[in-house]
Length: 138
Image (tube, rainbow, N blue to C red; front, side, top):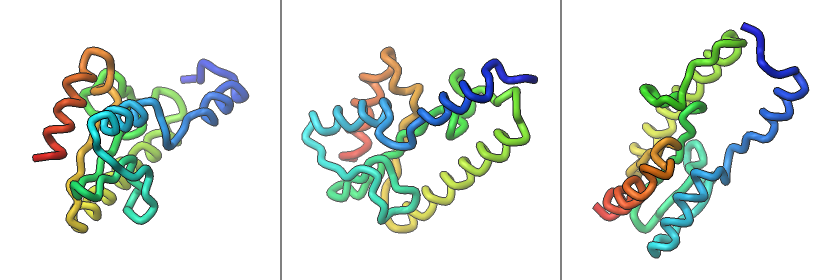
């Protein structure tokens, strides 16, 4: 199936996708800071450079995009229909890398919390963030 965009437009769109400081990450960080939690961002000392590291609580928070991290069962994750020779192995590598990083973090004694991008939509955001606080202090 051909792409809906020209190569130039597709390249432009893909180049604008950020790997850090995304809007979902900003939402979580601002909420945590407003509740008095302090954290480190994308700490390179840990496997996968987690989005949020909270040393005081021995907790790592990963804010996952539904597409890039293959959120199964989520309406925001759809297997790509074009260029599957590229996308399917790439998304599989992302999932394997996530699993390895989470495993290493747990072995190091860290609690790992994953927040999905879809959980931060307006209708679920308040519940998700309040639930996050309970997970951190539990």
